[in-house]
Amino acid sequence: MQMVRKRELTDSEQDSADRLRKIWERKKLLLGLTQEKVAHACGWSTQGAFGHYLQGKNPLNIDAVFRLARVLEVDPREIMPELHEMLVSFFPKIGMIDRSLSLSDEVMRVALAIQALPPKDRASLSKIVDALAQQVGNDIADHG
Image (cartoon, rainbow, N blue to C red; front, side, top):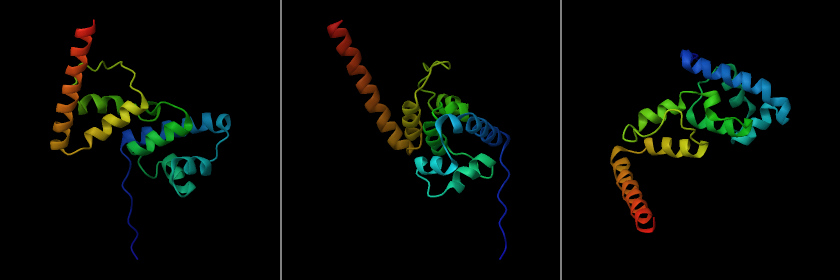
């Protein structure tokens, strides 16, 4: 049986793994965590999944970053700082997003989920959001 070699992590992926490892070293005693507890809290069946992320054997994905950030009680951007830039580039229509804006974990999760939609569904959702925003603007004008 031939072993399939995993690809090397990109520099950015390795940087995220390094940041995760530093956060882990800082937080594990403070939060009373073991790798097994983290894996369980993230919904993974074994400690190995977390261990592979820590060791840089597997690249972190967006879902793993959000799960780990929640368990380790950090902003997901501490693990993967490029998340904010990803959001800004995903939503060029929202040019009003200030790059220094603090986006919550939930806002980022929703925005990334929207980006994952097929273009037709994104366009439909965009129309709904535009209509809601216009209605809110009208309501403010009527009662302002």
